[in-house]
Image 1 (cartoon, one colour):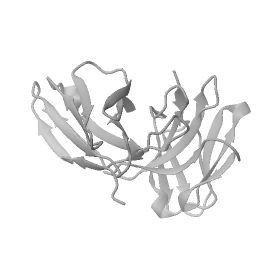
Image 2 (spheres, chains in turn brown, yellow):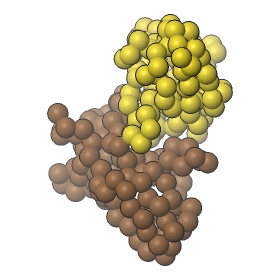
Image 3 (cartoon, one colour):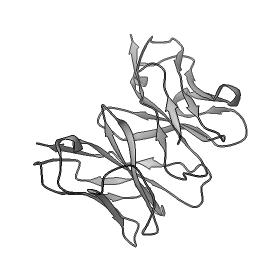
Length: 115
Length: 114
């Protein structure tokens, strides 16, 4: 079974631009969550989607948004990029049925550099 | 909100020595507990998890962890370190109120000395 796939793997953007990152979950997984990883802040939860609905949201500004499609694929968007948005963005998928200690499975991430 | 503390951002052990990575959590209700490993330029891979039942949990690559409720700890151990164990290790928790929202520790970088 294929794992979580994230595209693109690497990208460089200019401050003020916007970026869209894509995530394809493991087949059959309906929950997709996004995390930001930086050396200073570690791994921080952005949001989780389940069946096209945002189920949980972390403490990030409104510039960070996401969506999920009917095939469970997800995208996240960051508008008006700031230098501090440079990070590894990780997508994780889970079967998502209920809250009983589900494991989340990570993709390899998208490295975003803002210059 | 949950918080996870990993004591020691860097740990060095000799090849063949015991690996002990510490994790403590703060939670008013017993959480679900996880250890993940991250190799350079890769995502996180699950090592093991505790949800319920036996408090000593065995994972992949010879790792195990013990849930101690009285100490709010979930330390990761491996009897004999291998060079391939060099990586970043993250402890994480979730619970029934947060579902698939995980809270991660700041990570411990493990170096294995030949």
